[in-house]
Length: 461
Image (cartoon, rainbow, N blue to C red; front, side, top):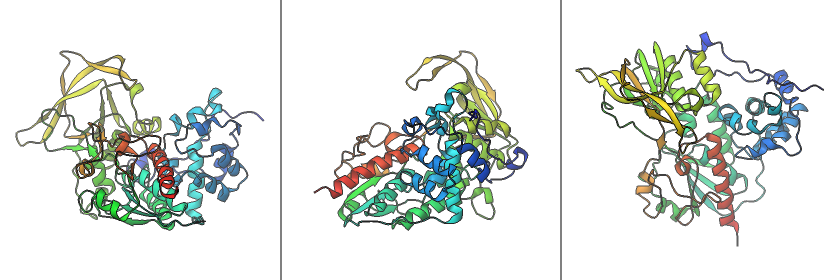
């Protein structure tokens, strides 16, 4: 049988339609398309793809079950390692992880692992999920702080093996960055809510509107629980610290996306969360968050949306798929420019941004070529709204109220990466709060490490 060198295309909303709505762009495989794509898998005995998966899904195993049309068994196989497959099937950067190591890459495109994962996850969501039996229950309780991907993973893994788990979430709805940070057109809220319900079905209790560090401290939780996992993410935005950053019309990407995603500003006035969109929007940054913010601004009525990035497209950390979608939708990319200051009018409203042209030098600590300013190249670029998407750091509330919890200069919690242990006894951490901004699947991988360590701590005699 001849090897098919290209992926089976995934159906998508037409560009002219999707830029006017917040419905999901990628529509998912049909059964016929999934079977065609699954047939491309070579079923390699050494399974190099698994080595690229932060949660070690048995990828050949679940794809083989798709080939055999055993979809119920396929989703069970995935859920042995991953509690949130419908989410990761949509937002996981498979192209730089499992698919990057696929043997088929030697002759063409890798197997579309993420699309197949989404197919069986959506099959289960449509059919209804099964609750796995809990063989043994332990008289142990764990508190999980934060209901993002790391926290949900820890909670799900521990609950499935008989540990009682309570999640404490600061917002009014669980899901963390999956709910407040990723737009509806990339990850529908119904998907996140369904996967949260699955976690709850395992016996996990979720308390919302609880700000740990204010409503209750880590030390207070330790009096009631046998161990605590901190998975609060990195939700505090970083700023440029340049003149004019307090002008009216400048948002952090965090505020902008939280207003739109969690507080439903895109449904104003049905939801009373106003958000003003400029005519010409500049988004500063080159990651997935920058793409999300730019594409969201476009859908909310901006006439022009510009990405302003200090390197070139080759160095952009955003997923290739997101860059392609942004270009298709009319987002304008401006490379090798760096903000110097924001320009305002006499009433304090943003009217422009002064940029300096850059050139690229030798690679820096990130492995990407370092941007070097070109003297005398400054110019003013007219915009009336700016969104700053240059990264995030953890909120310092927990570290400020837990004095014996060690953090680094950026506020990320210091952990043993092999175990997830912090400097504080019986306290573990993982995800962006310990690593800095990273991917959903990396946060889940850290959650799995911590869950194993917590179980070992609580059950060893």
